[in-house]
Amino acid sequence: MGVIVESNVWEPNPALCLFFFISCCLSIYYLPNSTRSSAIFDYAPSSSFIRFQRSFLLLYLLSSVMEGLLAVFGEYDLAFHGISRDQMVISLCIGYATALFVGTFLGMLSDLIGQRKVSLLFCLLHLFVAIWRRVTGHPSIWIASICLSLASTIFFFNFETWMVVEHDKLEQRQDSVNDMFWLMTFVESASFIGSQVVGNWLIGGHEKTSLLAPSSVVVIMALSALAYVSRGWKEDPKSIILKDYQTKFRTYILSDKRVWLLSWTQATIHFSIAVFWITWAPTIVADGREVLLGLVYPCVLGAKMLGSTAFSWFSSGPLSLRTEECLVYACIIMGFVTSVVAFDYQGVEILLMLFCIFHACVGLVLPSLARLRTMYVPNDLRGGMMSLSIAPSNALMLFLLIQRGFYQNIENSTVIAMAALGLCSAAGCMYMLKRLGKQPHQNWHKL
Image (cartoon, rainbow, N blue to C red; front, side, top):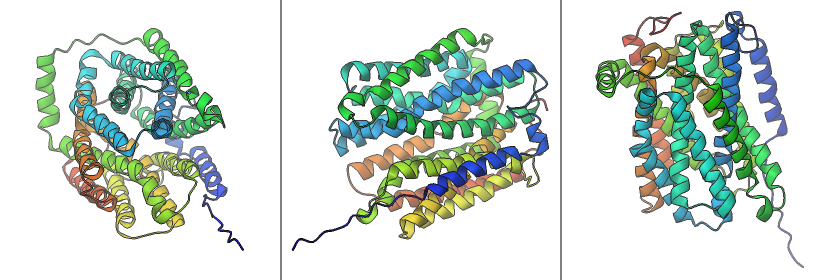
C-alpha cells in the first residue's frame, strides 16, 4: 500500500494584512492636529505647494513602481531564463560594485547639474533596460545590473533632494517637508505591494508569453515620467562651480562630526536592509520549510507603511521625542530583532513577527534620518552627502557577497549578526549626535 505524504505549505493569516491596512488608516486619520493641518490631503497656505506635492508624489509613485517591479521579479526573471546561482551572485556583485565606484559620485553630480537632469537619467536607465528586455527577451546580466544599480542609487537620494529644494524655494513650513518624508516612505512601500499585484496579474498562468509584460509596464511608466520631468518640471539653473562645491563639501560635510555620525547611521541602516532582502527568503525556508513567500512580502511592507505613519506621532504628536532619541530606541530594537534571527532558530510565525517589527522600525527610521539631514546638511550638498553615506554599506556588501557567494567563507547567520552589530553602533551614533547636535528645531532652513 502506498504512503501518502502531505505537504503543508505555510502562509500568513490574511487577517495580518487587514490589521496593517486598518492600523495605517487609523494612524493617518488620527494624526496630530499640527501635522494634519499641513498634510497632503488638506489645504496648505500655498496652492502652488499643494500642486507640487501632488505632482511630486505622482512621479514618485511611478518611480517606486518601476523600482518595485525590479525588486519583485528581478531574481524570478533570472531563474526563469536558466541563470545559475553563481551568475546571480555575479549579477549582485556587479550591481554593488557599480553603486560603489560610480553611484557614490552621482549625488555630487546631482548637486552640480541639478536634480532634473539626474531624474531624466533615472527614467532613461529603466527605459533602456525595459526596451532591451522586451526586444531581446533577456538583456545581458552585466548591462542590466549596471543600469538598474545606478537607477536604484539615484532613486535613493535624488527625489528626496529635489523635494527639499523645492520646499525651500516655495518657502513652506518645516512641518510640510516632514510630512512629505513619511509620505514618501508610505508611498514607496505601497507601490512595492502594488508592483507585486500588477506583476502577478500580468504574468498570470502563461509565463512564456506574459513574462515580458512587466517590462511593457515599465516602458509606459518610464515614458510618462520622462514626459513629466522634461516638460512639467522647471528648475533654476545651477550656478555653483566645482571648486566652490569642493570647498563647501569639505567645510560642511567632511569636517562636521555630526554629519559623520549621521552618515554612519545611514550606512548601517542601508546595510541592514540590504542584508534582510538577500537573506530573508533562505532564512524563512530553512530546513526545507515550505512557505508562500509571495504572501510574506506584503506583510513586511505593510509593517513598514505602519511605521512610517508613526513618524508624525513621535515627531510632533503626543508621543513627541527628539529625533535622535527616537532613532536610538528604533536602532536598538532593530539590532535586537536582527540578533535573534541570527543566533536563535525560530519558527515561521516568530520569524514573520520579527520581520514585521524590523520593517516597522525601518518605516520610522527613514523619515527620521531625512529630517536630521534637513537639520545638519545644506540643500546644495544633500545629494552628495547621501550618496557618499551609503558607500561603506555598498563596499561591505560587495565584500560579503564575494566571500559568501564564491568562497563559502561566511555563513548567513554571520552576515545577519554583522547587520545587528552595525545597528547597535548606529544607536550609539544617535546618542552621541544628541549630545553634540543642535537644538531640536534649529536647522539650515526657515521654520
